Image (cartoon, rainbow, N blue to C red; front, side, top):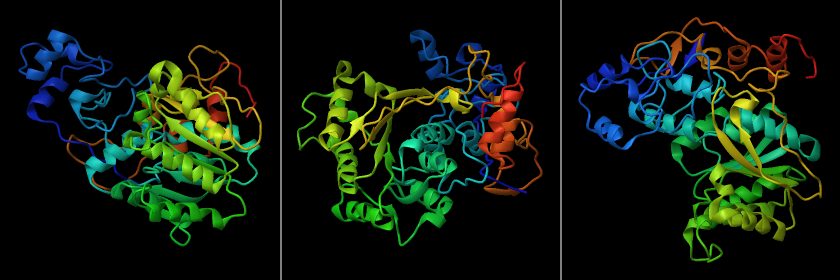
Length: 393
């Protein structure tokens, strides 16, 4: 069978020497002081994150997959058993992208595409929660990146009728993985602030009687400052464009994804202003969902916020937790071993974009990633691992 993107980055001689001393779960503190490194000297003097120069543990979820998960000094992404950084495919699995999802563009772009993405299984949980409240199961995905949000919603039966992304390599990945959704150019490459591009996005609504959802994660850095309504403040432009598309398309609902910091900007005033902006255009906005990815099947400690609004005045609760270390009625979060344990071994600085290999699943999660089972069967198998099996799926 074919396996894509299973490529490991290079380690320098110095990094190789460091890596040999870092055990599973270890970090820069395990590197002997005699190994020369200006950066390590600085970290030792001032203290540093325990995720620097880290190695994954087989029995735990990974730390957050960042856009630089190929760099030893910036992450905890040494393979738990092999002397190398995790591969692009392994990073994708830890983000919950299935093996059939192929990443295109330069290697540096692929790292960014994966690190920037909303984990599909986290998006799936949100999609499942809002599904009963939306009649038309169609979505327009703004700031779509490689397509993590879309993938999660597709898993729950939603259909992509339009999307937009400004980064060419990100868009290439999205387009090639969603080619059947590109009806008459409805997948739009370009800057959403350009009126021509925005009009193409808005025209996606003509493909259905009513659009179900507009989804996406616009940057909101400007909200950390006072006076964000200033029309000349470009820091807020992308959020305003998201709102404008929602206003013009008039979907049944919207879902805006962002980092947890959005909840504490200006001591909570920023999120109030964001919500009021949607209320002003006629939407009822629920209390933001603050979700932890590992509680929804993603083998990764990652937190995200989702702001959900609908035209109908309905209360939508956050999705119920599916995995937990504390709740004995729920299976434990998926571990690194369960996520990548069955992938073929490779050396550092090796692997190819497309390889014909034989590999088999070693866990229900790997079976899900390989497309052997769907999410419902995957979760059923996870429940069966409990001391007393539950069947509430």
